[in-house]
Amino acid sequence: MSENLKFENIYCVGRNFAGHAKELGNKIPTSPLIFQKSNSAVNINETIEIPSNKTIEHELEVVLLIGKEGVPKTREEAHTFISGFSIGLDLTDRHLQTELKKKGMPWFASKTFKGSAVIDANFIHECPQEFYLMVNQKIRQEGNLKDMIFSFEDIILHLSKTVDFKKGDIIFTGTPEGVEALERGDQIEMGFNNYPPKKLVVI
Image (cartoon, rainbow, N blue to C red; front, side, top):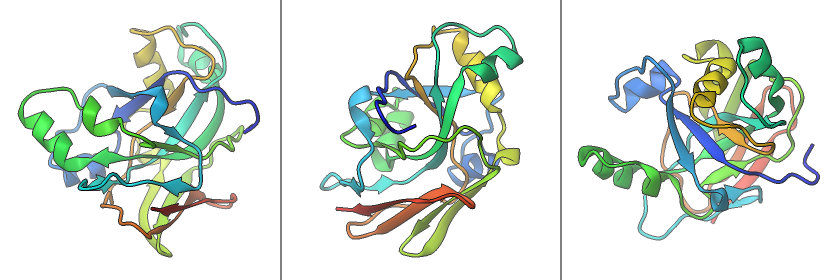
């Protein structure tokens, strides 16, 4: 499904795994916490460029590809809007995010910079239960769909209260615990268990 992909809006869900919320000292939300990245943040390459003088942390996430336009009304209909599943990294300028949160300001600047929406463009039709991130051949993050606070359908229905979906929209669905800073030279492997991984290098 990687050919002729044209991404539109990028929606992201924060604190969708209890373990991650706790590791950052955040409360567990009662409804999906939504933020966005700019379309220009998409990175489907094999490299991750770290901005100078920044502490950039990885957040491993399942990424949904929206395959049709409109607004779903039911959970069953919401599922039909998903045309593919993949893996991505929501890269975050953690120090900046912390400062913005202290001031009660939006996170946008800490989430949107060149290449901060890392995506494996090889979307698949069914979503495996488990996914992982390895850095320098060591496991950094492991996720299981059963640990998500809000399901894919929950997220889509929540978003549909605010937006009309476009074909090519993508949704980052939240990260499990284990986020850490990336360093130049890091070798990254991410993917679903029993599927070919996406490999990248940090430069």
